[in-house]
Image (cartoon, rainbow, N blue to C red; front, top):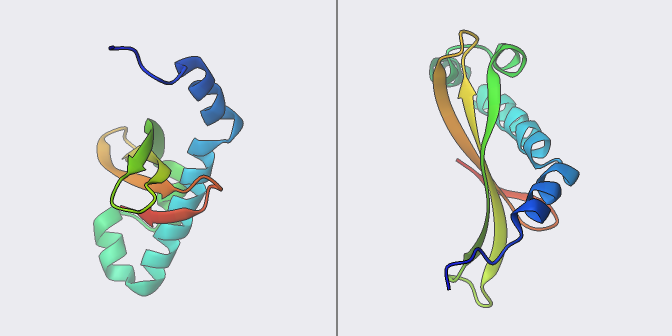
Length: 111
């Protein structure tokens, strides 16, 4: 059987209804702010701009949303990850981040 076991239309509605891109972007903002507070020089070097400029002028684009099942846990753990690519203010690709959510939408990892 080579069918996708998820209705893609319903999944798209789920992504939009739950504002997954917006949630991930908000968590990234908090993550960037914390990184800047911890080590402003390293953060500035990594992002090439202050956090405020990154959030206001850089382009955040939804790249991927995936449902995963992690079999390392017992019982296996279901989770979502949202991948966002970031472009600088000139539109050049800059980097990407993944935000991992459990199903109550609490973040448990960002990379």
